[in-house]
Length: 255
Image (cartoon, rainbow, N blue to C red; front, top):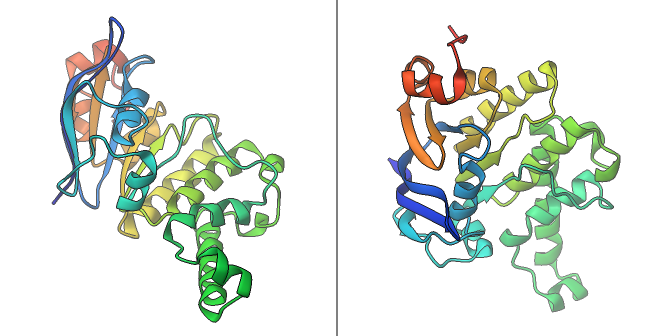
């Protein structure tokens, strides 16, 4: 089933066409990568998909629902979450507290019931904490639950942002360069985390420059160049596509 449909999406900034009539589908339960040179329009397209930017033309459908004109907070409630190219954590909160913030869109407790500590409130808080702890284990942060986000090394900060996004309960998770700045061991661990997330039933769209990771995890790849889609398909076809080699990959090295 097509969970996400991107149809002729165009985004302009003045005279610059950042995304130029891009179309592709994302099948539920898959991992789809979005690659291309710097300035190809990848992050802008992510911003359009998550309502941080409005498209000038085209439509995006999530599970058949048009996302045009919906604010980012409503898109999260629909089941779409994302991370950012530069980590955006609550630095003075612990890792566990950061993930608990991600649970907020799913909570129903009001101010009065929270103040009175009604049984429903206590049960909801317990469930949220248990889920946050489970997500920390999923990304390998169970031993750092009480550490301040500001004190975590770069690789763990990346993992924490993924856990916080998962806390919103998404069906679709968009990751913007999750392997940026990671070493080889951390990237390998990230790949395992992404597989586990997919196995949980979460569909993934990943913007990434690490071609080793992209070729390993992706079911399909979309390639952008100068805002336009120049190729789409499974990894083994993409790495041999002449247009992709010329624009981005260089000679294929991912046999």
